[in-house]
Image (cartoon, rainbow, N blue to C red; front, side, top):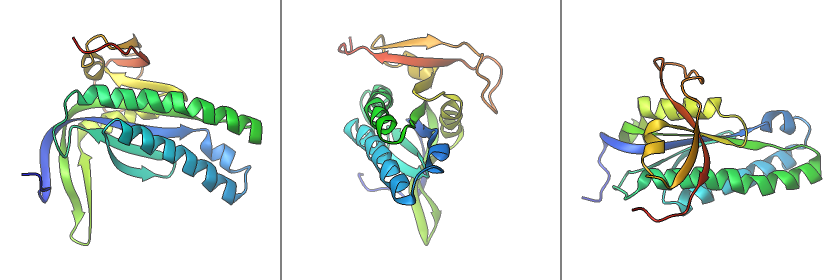
Length: 200
């Protein structure tokens, strides 16, 4: 059925977290109206990239956002869609950053993390306040990848890197990036570019 069930269901999804690096120090120098205007432009860019690539925008938390692919309905090539959204965000933010540099003498950049795996997806919360969201280790790992990614960088896991089958270019950092709660040997890769060739 297409109706959403109450409660959660274990589903394999791709999860993306994005955060605006350098926004807090910049916001301290600007008027509240300017802060809101800039933040709204960044959040609009984020949501456009997610929705254009078929993602579910889960939530905004301050200057960060979470999205996922592969639920509520199964999606073909959902990991590639998440990767494309991440790349679109980094590329799209460069133009906006240049504009801010000219206008305010300050600039900001996105840090992005993408991971794929099983998560509990569904209507989670209390009867008075329910959110359709995803929880679990896959979500936490995507958040940790994002937390470690420098501005203008997308960090992905090996599972994400393998899914597009040659349609992306990455650089492996091996296990040099230590993710909280992850065992030794968890490989982190930098997403360098999306090579637009059709899936073979």
